[in-house]
Each structure stands twice: as structure tokens, then as C-alpha cells.
Length: 381
Image 1 (cartoon, rainbow, N blue to C red):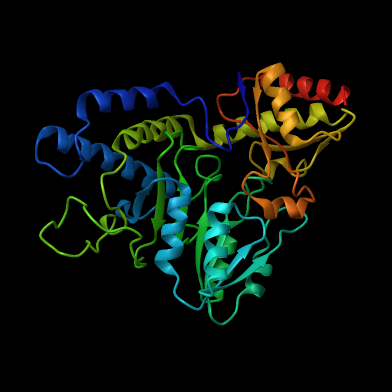
Image 2: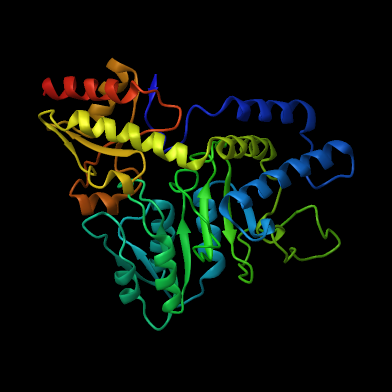
């Protein structure tokens, strides 16, 4: 199988990730932070190690400001519902993933929020000036993606943060496609909150995610209950990260995440990004002369991740993806990619397109094989 669906989840994982999860499961899988025996202590240390490593990667000033979550969607819901109040105004974009757009739309339709949506520029990025103009006197939050999971284009989150702060608003960044794929320093960019899954660019297993909350900003907890701390108190702890973490964490997954972060640090984010960009560029160049194939995000590859969007003749994207899988053993993503607004902007709604997303472990010949397969499918149309 040639796996080209890394924007959904990275695969394969580094062998060290699987080894770390197996070792934890076999030797240390007690409930972390809940006991004074050696297994419980070691389990807690494994979770703390993952948190510290993630804080270092993000440039977070305090590791306790990172709360582990179920996934990126969970982290975004924690941020939105823990920060916003009745009657607040939010500025977002028209091309957000459903993990951000649906909670906002739900709150908006319930009459609890006002939401303004800003369209992208021609280069598929979000203009800080447009965001600033969309802000009103009562704007509480700017909630935007760092990298579109459809376009693959990198937004200038530092400039977007300045635009939000100039308007007196906080900023929440959906960093699902950014962490591990490009440099992201939450302190240098002055981000108030950043939410993301850990199973994509961080090479962790599914079921892991995180929410960064800057020092001085407190969110209402989405869930309350057992934390292993302050058990004598009747109310949920207020200090981070316990404030946002209730219940037993996915310690098996976090042990794997720690190993994934080690791999990323040893490999280097720049090397990962250059690898993915190189493969995407190779595919775009090979398809440029193929009749009947359109690359919809081929501009400015240097400012994009390893995502390539394709239309093949008059075929439905699901049909192309099925043919690539059945005939060539190539895995891609078809449809709307949980971001219908992005496809409305591209003019590909409701049919969607084929998304090819490269990862660090793709081989040099994978772009060539994918181009040949797509060309053969196009020739048969």
C-alpha cells in the first residue's frame, strides 16, 4: 500500500512509538497520578514527560499550560465552550474544518453567539487586515486555522494574533495541520490558545490531542471529576492542567506520543517539511502535462504543506479514490474533507476532490507512482 492520506493521520508511525506503547502496556500501565506505588509513579512520569516534551516543541513557557485531550475536536470544544460567554462575537474564516465550524455554528444558531466569517485571499490564505476589519467592539475571539486541511496553505498566525489583539480579542488557533509540519512557537506568536490532535504531524497514536492555554487565561472546564489531586475538595481543581483534565488519561497513547516527539526532535521539523514539500512538488510537476487532470492548489508550493488537490476528468472524487485503492494500492482521501466551506470557495462543493497528502515516511517513488496511476485513470475517462 502507498499511503497518501497523512493529513487525516500519519502512517506508518516510527517504530519507537509502537515500542513505547508496548513497553508501557506490559510494564507500567497503572493509573497515572493516582497511586504511590512504583507503577503508578512511573505512569505519571510518562505522562509528565510527554507534556514537557510537547511544551518544548511548542515554545510554551509552562508545561502545565498544556492539557491533554481526546483529539483536536475535543480540544477545540474545550477552548470555545470554556472561553466564550452568551452574546459574544467571534471572527472566524469560511474555510475552517468542521471541528471548529460546527461548534461555532451550533452556538450561533442557538442564539448564544454572533459569528462573522472571513473568506480567504486568492493565495488561499487569510488576510490579517480582513480579520481586523471583521472585528467589532465586542469581539471576544478570533478562531482560525493555522493550515487549511484542504488548501494546505500556511496562514501567518503571528500576524493574525496581532490583528486579534489590536481589536481587543483573544485568538484560538486550530493547529491540526501545523504542529510537526511547520515551526510553531506559541509564545513568539503570542497565541492565547492552540488546539490540535497529536496523531498527525507529531506521530502519536489516535486518541491523543492537546490544548495550549497561555498563562493568565483561565477556561471553564468542559468536564469535571476525578483528577488524582485535591481529592478532599468537593469541587474540581482550579490549577492547570488538572483544571481541564478529568478522568483517567490515555496514558498508553501519551507514552507513544512521547516517543513520537522524540523522533520529531531528532529528525527535525524542517527536514520533515522539506521532505513532504518535495514529494508534493514532484507530483504537481508530473501531473502538469497530464490532460484531464487539474491541480487546484498548485500555487506557491513553498508556502504549503504536503497536500495536493486533484480533479480527474469528469469522475467523482470517490470513484477516483476507489480506483486508486483497488487497482494501484494507493490510499488517498476523497470528498469534502470535513471542510465544506473550503470547497464552496474552490467551487468543488458538493462533489469534493481527491486529496493527496504526503508524509515523512513516503518513499521517493511514491509521487511518480501516484502520477502514473492518476494519468492512467484520466486516460480511461
